[in-house]
Length: 341
Ligand code: 89V
Image: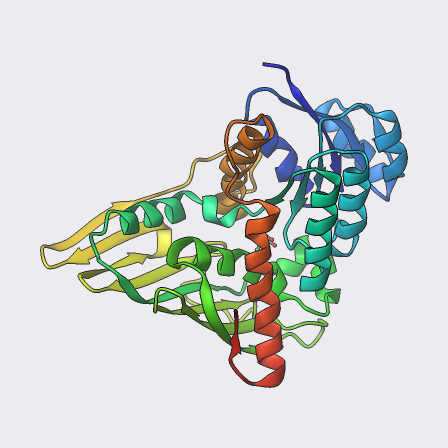
């Protein structure tokens, strides 16, 4: 099997995990780095022995023979970099959130399609060990058809310390956390027929909203409440970055609670098991369950890049999540339910 070579665009906080995440899979190598501040790319390059470092993305693509591009920059640069890679006929993997608007995401997909290149999204939350276990348990049918569920990622984690740029986003928590948890909602409970959302800004020193509550009505006739927030309100059960999930079905209930405990309750009683994520030396222990989920997400994309089946998190699939994110903003602004066709 020939190694796949890729260029990583963006060497900020997340690149420290995205890069070693790829290297957990056999047959893939990062051979070039781009960052608009060259010294940051050089620092990461030194750590991983990557000498080809650029502060000009077009020049990198001109000079470096790579098999795909991995884009890990700020959301405002995604469209430009995706198009640049597509113009070189390179498959692209892009970090979430895919785009600054639904229209921009649609144009990016159309441009990749026109260029004949595949677009994938590094949407890792659905690949978390406990969330995969939750899905497998749902799929056994033990709790029957789900009619109501709650997904919650609410914490007081000081997220701006590691990712200060998040303070300046005019649209924050729905794009940053909502992109993940609304994707998890689709993954577990199916597509949404409608959405309703309310938001708050609790921090006084940020541009966007830091608290959002979403109600989805799914095409399977389930009501899904999705809560997210970074209000730094010192919750007793603050276990960032764990996502808690509770689903009520016609024959039982399923709960993913703190410390990765999964509880299935049916007429026969409660079955309890722990579903902890694997631990990687390069992962930040404060982000364990999230960082470890980068590995299976990328492995799934790699299989698709090698022509061994379709990836889960394609651009087309992620567009449905992007539609939920911006549908939520539309709902919050208008104070009404937004229905999808
Ligand atoms: O995955 C992310 O985008 C991070 C997190 C949600 C963990 O804070 O920003």
